[in-house]
Amino acid sequence: MVKSSSSSQNAVLDSLADPSYRKEQDSKAMSKPIQFYFKNVTEEIIGPEHGLSKKELDKLAAQIAEITRAMASERAAGNLPYRDLPYQHQTVEKINKLADQFKGRFDNLVVMGIGGSALGNIALQTALNSPVYNLQSNSQRTGPRLFVIDNVDPVQFGAILDFIGNDLERTLFNVVSKSGRTAETASQFLTIAESLRQKLGNDKLKDHIVATTDNNSGTLRDIVDREGFTSLEVPDGVGGRFSVLSDVGLFSAAMCGIDIAELLAGAAAMDERVKSEDLWSNPAALYAAIQILYYRNGKPLSVMFPYSYQLKDLSDWFRQLWAESLGKATNLDGEEVFTGPTPLNALGTTDQHSQVQLYREGPNDKVFTFVDVENYDQEVTIGPSGKVDELSYLSQRKMSELIIAEKQATEYALLQSKRPCLTLTFPAISAHTVGQFIYFFEVVTSYAGGMLNINTYDQPAVELGKEATFALMGHEKYRDLLSQIQKTCQIDKSYLL
Image (cartoon, rainbow, N blue to C red):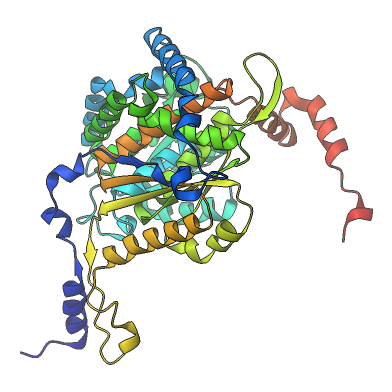
């Protein structure tokens, strides 16, 4: 029997793309440690002007040991609760049980949140589920479609409302806010609640809403108690940017089939690696020391450059973690310092063609962190070149070989321009290794904040913008602020072209 042209094409594609490739990999790679390579920031590789010496780093060893002891003390006193999130076994049981209760009832899960209430959810989904997860059928997906609404852009929000509008009975909403006062999340929630009331009736509201909020007080907590919504907890003392390994990020992950126990196991494994007071045996301490030393030496920009589409949103998550934690006007002694390295992100190989020109020939003011992968989830064989001799070097090669070569080529080019490069290598992308990555950078951030002598865990500069939004939207308590905003922001038409 002769195959149709479409089935022939499918057969060719099946031969090129092997979805079972991951199963053939060493299963131990899924839980092996991610590795940190730092030789390419040394003077041996990029010279004394831009490279670091062991002597320079050794000078930071005593400070690192002091910060390590201080963090251990703070943790023992209960003042660093994010450090204990990997060990919340009862939370895993609670969330998995809730996800099981919802299993099969919903085709869509909509997370409403912003900043730390959203970025972690997005990062986990991108890293650990298929890039076409939402396009798969119900039988193919490991859970409901996931939409994370992290903005109040009316086009984005309206489009999602239109998409789920006729399927509200099969849609679950997770509103995530510590206080419930955040204007973006509150507006999303009010709109969704009204849609549910109109289409399903007020008595059905609680069947479609899970609220992740403060356990004891706040606007959203009051609503939860009044309406009887299912609720999860934003843990005390854990800021949004450190909260992905709590209920904030674990619920949507579990709903979409991600192994949250393995995620936390990976974080716990990393915890054991980052407790040492010795700079040279603690990867988080060494990474932070390198970054802050370069920051002090005139390289204030830190570029994360993952060579995996799956990891691209983890670099977005890192960007918030670094910026909100380390950008501070004053230090712990009350002195004005206006400190903090600026995080940037790029995606390999895409941004080789959009940013590397600047990175090689622009100011040498950046530190690069490549993130690469040894074993990709799927393999694709590049098609034959046929009679095109110029492309024969690609013919029948693995696409994973190409992306690995692209990373090495870009790193080589940057090193030729004396640009410092670090590398974090995933043995494979799994819940375990993603948990390692998240916890690694959370601890890195604590070390960096300690070295800068700042409060790593507050975000005072964010509040004025929130209050200004309240004023502009007519909040009664902010009338005085409104007049100041109007005076400052009034358009002077003589400057308008």
